[in-house]
Length: 184
Image 1: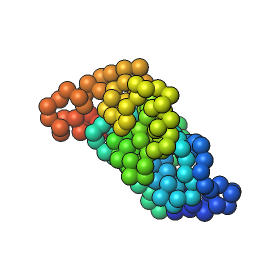
Image 2 (image 1 turned 45 degrees about the vertical axis):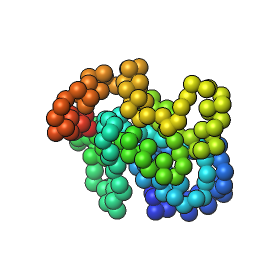
Image 3 (image 1 turned 120 degrees about the vertical axis):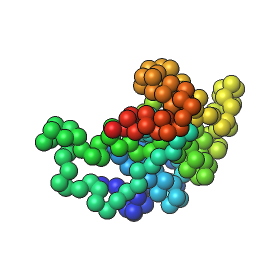
Image 4 (image 1 turned 90 degrees about the horizontal axis):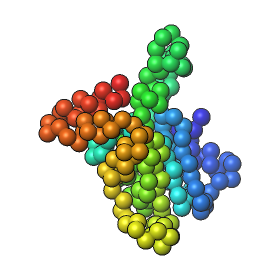
């Protein structure tokens, strides 16, 4: 399987390099490190990046699960039904990274957040941003990740209580407790 350490060689081996229109990354658990390694290698330059992100960790909190040589461990259950346990690295249990973390990392690579639907985010490279603004004049970049997150919540992609939990408490430790509850 693809890892941040081998993704560049894998892309070369299948003849994929240069400018491409869209890159979609959805590997259920290591999307962000895999995407960042791909873009850092300058092998492909997508106009549009679509990546699965975690709705469990709201803005402005940053989180990213980084790769480890023991992941996935062969003794871990593969499915939620195996031995009555949820795999410790299932997509739901340990999400890949937060919206804010992805926004910060991808901005350094020249990509801007465009949309987030509660599962996937769309990022546009600088040239594609100009085309998006031209096509829909009401769009202003950079798009705010808090607005994208709350809009996804308003459309029912996850319960509005989640948004209220992190938005309303005055105590940040209480908010962190809610986030921990969302991912465990």
